[in-house]
Image (cartoon, rainbow, N blue to C red):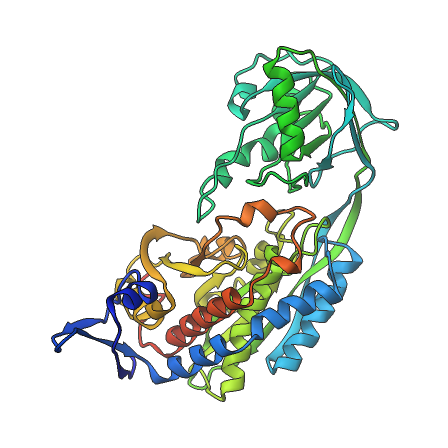
Length: 477
């Protein structure tokens, strides 16, 4: 346990429940008349840091800067390149050391024309968008009868050859959950729908957007082709347009659609990770890595996905630097590139650091689930219950519970987690995250200052506690 200061908090029962829904690992209840007194062990430096984060707008200001000055930043585009330069300048301005870009190359992809029409039985425009990596339709589009599949499993169970010359339409709603648990199952149609439909002879695919909103904004996102299957175009419909199609099929109508998509592969393009550090005072070779991903889809300005993660992680570093406190271990902040198109920044980071300092990474965590309040602490440590208890005691007052759910630390952390880097995650409330995710609606006005401040406070407390503890993270993993 690190040195701590006992702070006596005299709270009424209602206030106690509001501030500490999960209790505290280090809390103990002592009798006191006429009410009980909870004694919580809180590190005095953590108190300084969290107070500074809650009173400030460090993270919010960074998100605002990124989304306003750069805007959309699709992987491999000039906009993502400008974002990297922005990231370097921002890190240097905040006071990070060893700031650099670690470049890598990706296969570029650009969006083109996107139009859709129901030709029959009820002619009308539909709102759609190509999925990332999709091929284009023939010039002038493709018009065909539509075959309806209520779920992706229904398509997979259909016989091969049954869709010759047809457009497959895959419906299926995604359920809301604070941790986004419905995303994985719903995302199967986006990831593999084109391959499964092509196996059965389809000429194109439409899917209900992988999202939880009812807005007329389609959700994009990366898809994948199998190497040995013909590539066919695939697009996502907005939820209201998917509802229209569902109603027509519910009436046993024959539906015919025309779509035109103009995306194209553009060959090798530059991307990169932006890296900066607060060098540790006693154990500079031991690295705690935090970050978010810098790229975004091109439809919105990438505020919740993942400008928020950039602001939260870099904001935590700014709070520490501004406080004048010096962590014992090195805090490394990474803005990962090209996450949206396949976690390419995460994989590139592992390749760049394997055999060098990856073995010195003692803990890693990514913020990539919007800007909702952190409500839960999740561990990817196999033997880290004692540390998780210590950390929870420092963040419980922020309304954060301790969970038994496991984590790999976040999307871009996954590749290094697989290489043995210990990970934890501060789980945010993402109940509404998939209302905005990968749509034109992902913009700065969806960011709440107070929620971001709570995130920054939690991340600052986590980073500082991990830096100061005597626990051997590698040893307990």
